Amino acid sequence: MKITRGCGTPVLIVRAVPSPWRTPAATLIRVLISSEKITTTIHQMNLMYCVGMVLPDQAAPPPFVQLAAHEVRWRLLRALAHSDLRVRELVALIGEPQNLISYHLRLLRSGGLVNARRSSFDGRDSYYHLDLERCADALADAGAALHPALHPALRLPAAELADTAETPAAETPSVLFLCTGNSARSPIAEALLRRRVGSRAEVTSAGSHPRARLHPHAVRVLRRRYDIDIADQRPRHLDTLTGRRFDYVISLCDKVREVCPDFDDRPPRGPQRLHWSIPDPAGIGRDETVQDSYPAFDRTAAEIETRIRHLQPILFSTPHRKVRS
Image (cartoon, rainbow, N blue to C red; front, side, top):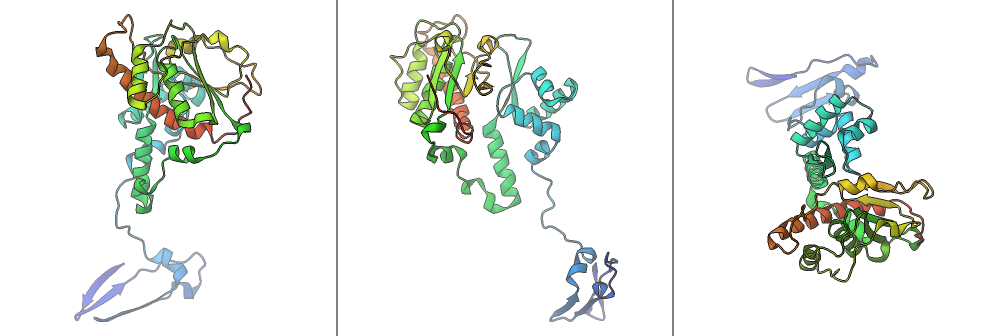
């Protein structure tokens, strides 16, 4: 379609494309143009074939859409949304060759959606972690690019929706957090989840080799940042939970993941096993009284709080059996 001028009067020339219905009326276009008004008679059905639509913004899809649109990358995102995983585990889950999985993981890392962290159990391994906060921002930006009404400022965060939901007692989920010493990471997770959900979930923590007491920095960071006091809590051994039923078993330590029981005998099909690869903020052989190590606990608590916030919708979107001790 183009507009030309002849003797001072603009003339619209439209090339009619044959209609699939082949009706003469459907291809009739009569356009009368004057300097003051345009009168157009066009069969509406044929308009789709005669005049091409030109969008005002021909920008490429947002980066998140380009990354997530590929089937393999989408399946990787789905898998990592539930648990931190190693490459060989992703190969088994996705069912694609390792070189292909590694290629797409590299693209997701370049896009800032996925990061990798060396395993504290075996330094030759790395755990891949999906940054859900980054994904939420990228997804919201993609929605806003599609339509202003989808701007993130107009959306209610999923965590707030979970906070306002009332969970029947018969569907109370049970959650077990695990780390090696049950002195820092797992008790922090236990305290933060209990703070957010109250009695709507049964929450506990344990360790494979529990320490004699909680790390003082773990107690301190919970008191300072969240006004939670766990000073009287004592680490517990995983064996003390024998016979307990859990809907979710979440390991926060690469080492304890390797020794954690499968709980396969728990009906109906065992708990959901999730892994959060979070380094020990105390490090190895670090003096518990050194104040310089406190920032590591502050960062650890912040990461666990973020993961807890994204765990909530999962806990309260699935029916659970009533907890029995």
